Length: 234
Image 1 (spheres, helix red, strand yellow):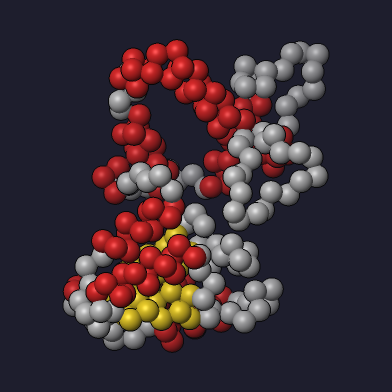
Image 2 (cartoon, rainbow, N blue to C red):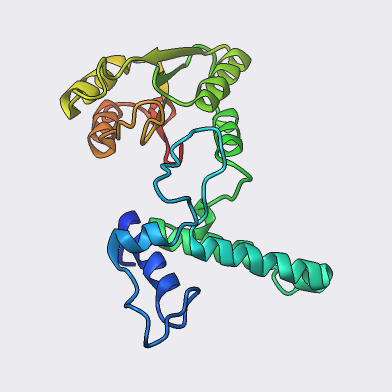
C-alpha cells in the first residue's frame, strides 16, 4: 500500500470537491477551480479573515464533510430504518479506509465517539502492575492527564509529567528528545505524548522519540517494555 501524506490527502479532497462535476461544479464561463492550499481554504465555509484555531469550539467543516452530513441527514429523514439497514457495513468501510491510510490492518483500527473517549479506553485498558510508572509531558492535553491520573490511582502506579521544552519558539529536536530520554526509567511502562501540542503549536519529533523508546526497550523482557502511546489528534 502506497502511503498518502496528510497534507496531500487534504489537498486532493479539496480539489476534488471543487472540481467540475464536484460539490461546487463550474461552468465553462467560470474561472478554473483553485488548487493546492488555496483549494483547501476555499473548501471551508469559514468567514473570510477568520482563523479558527480555538480549542473548545466546533471546527468549520470542509465542503466534502458538509456534503456528507447533508446526505446522511436527508437519508435519515426520509427513511431511517432502511437507510441504516443499507449501510450496516459503513463502519467496516471506514476502518478499512483508515487502515489503508495508516498502512496497517483494519483489525488494528477502533472507532470512538471522540478522541477523549479513545484516550480513556486506551489508558484504562493497559495492563500494568503496581509500581509501574506512566510518563507524559506538562504540555499534554487535559484528557490525557486525567485518564493517566485515574489509571495510576486505580493501579497503584506513579504518574510523572515532564517539561519537554522551556520555550516553544526556541526548542529543538535535541532538547525534546533528551528530556524524553532522561524521563524514562526502569519502572516506566507507558510514555503518553501528543503529536502536536494545542497549547504551544509544537510538533514533536515522533520518529526520534520512538527510536529512544526502542533503544530503552532493547534489553527489556516483553512484560517490562515501554509502550509509546501517541495522541495524533489533539
